[in-house]
Image 1 (tube, helix red, strand yellow):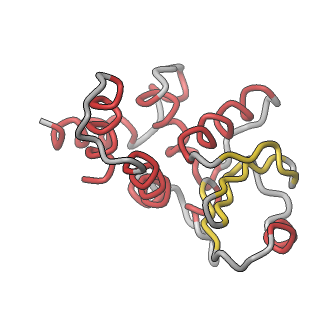
Image 2 (cartoon, helix red, strand yellow):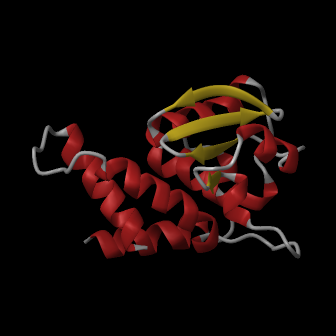
Image 3 (cartoon, one colour):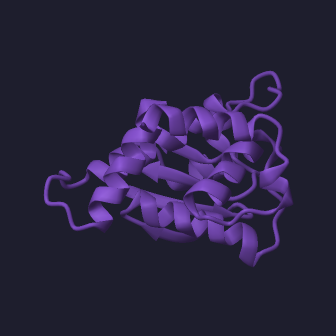
Length: 160
């Protein structure tokens, strides 16, 4: 929970031109938030499924992108990190590669809209949180999502 609070504080500081935000700190916090978020706002788990891998899938530096793509067939859009590269995967193809996880997150989120892809059930609430609270795009799904308002209220209480 603190990671998300720190992420929002760092993002706010960087928008306001604060000089005390360390270089690379935003990406580190975004990576951590993407790994933790699916566990903080869980959906029903399927056996053997790791929810965070449906949004952000960090890999060891020695792994090849082709090998990872073979094991992630039929997944909705997500981010694979190998070394300092963040690959946005859509339809088991690399859509775009970036060296910024923040940029990759924007691209993966945008791909849902551009290609009219339904949110993955494994990370539905996480994506609705990002949609409504980070990107400010509220709709009936995000407003009526069970558990999301409670999570947002708790997060806002921790911020104060």
